[in-house]
Image (cartoon, rainbow, N blue to C red; front, top):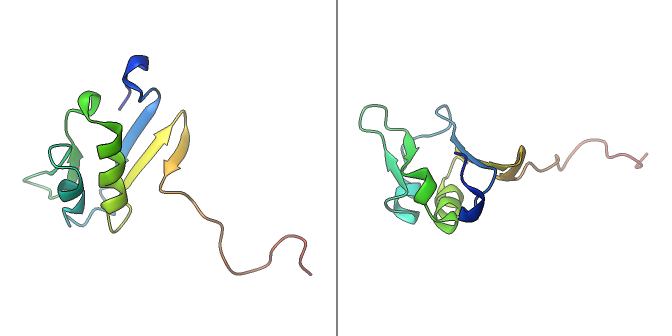
Length: 94
């Protein structure tokens, strides 16, 4: 999704990973009318990208139990965040 500068979503790209989407429909409950499930594939789809409120886009993404909805802005992932591992060797700890 690429939008105009005045919409407040400049540079925003929303992707739905079909390999992660399990048709749970939590996104459609959190953001009705913004996300729907495709009738044939069962995979979530973002509807009317240009007019979808930013808050609803993020609400649907946060509700996804498998984090299949990925939001990027200007080439950087903003949701879900990629966290470093909590185990293993940490730099500077010997």
